[in-house]
Image (tube, rainbow, N blue to C red; front, top):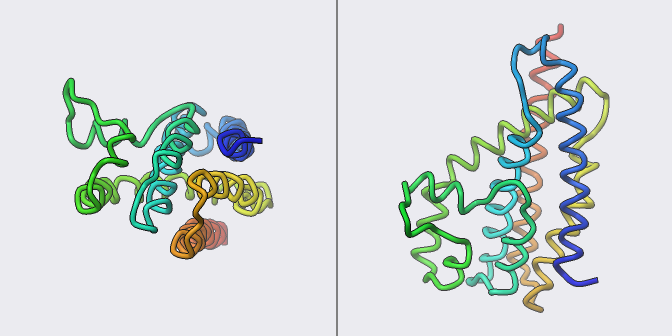
Length: 194
């Protein structure tokens, strides 16, 4: 199995869970007074996932073309590049992820820093939705997503043949932050139901 195939398999596992989340949410739409389309959630997820993968991949100081290719090709619904294009109001000179492989570290870090708050807001919205549903369903959705996520990360890291300890440390930090958002949302929902 190629690194891209491995990443796609992990991606499918994660998006299957998110589609299930959307199906359950449709049942609760009247209660929560909102409508959520699976496509919207998956587009947001793609941008957040790609941002995290880029951030992890550059921990070793570079974004190898092999890593960028997997990060670019894994998304099926949205793209980090779409977020950058919206944020920077790009015209005909559209931003593509491949540009990150040719930017110096300062330029690349600046692009990521400018969109970081948007990505955090998107990640929090995904975590909120999943936290509400995890509490309602009595399931640990984060744990269910961990193995597919790990497969994606392993594929990206193996793509350039060099797994750096800084990359591994970044994965742990990102996963703990996502899990923290879900824990906070579970506790918030539990307190509201008292």
